[in-house]
Length: 232
Image (cartoon, rainbow, N blue to C red; front, side, top):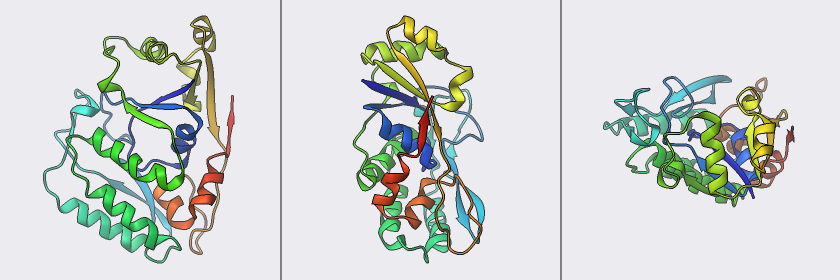
């Protein structure tokens, strides 16, 4: 069984979905410390031909709190403001009329915390893209948050009876193939290959939010993009 573990990111780039699509089960690592100015509640879209950072505002966010313990901001006005920005950015994109209702459904979802909010976004997007991977939060299952780093990842793999753990390429400095082999598991790293597509008439801006990918490409094309990676 192939397994991946990642912190929940809102509308992440296509590489996140490549990893999710590659495995049998995808663990949302939501009971770890929130990172300020990270990618949990931020990403980038295309606005007026340039990358534009957008943020989901949170309530009392702190690196001393777990992701699953942080709520969305109380003021609902940010949702309408962000939707208007997305409308301004993509209303002339070829798949706007299909993707914008999905975006509205994700942004207007009421959730107890930011982790649940992001998990719901995958419940909306994955069927549209064609991803069938099971997605579950770590906070509800494993009861091993006393373990740290690689030891905790290995323990989750053992609990899931995983035979193959796959991590983004950035984890090559964190995890050792020898340690996974000693536990009876294969360790691989995924590296995304360039994904290029027309973005209006401007010079292409790479690695934006999956929202950008969906606005400019039909689901079948996005499915083909999910296979543009190499496994190391």
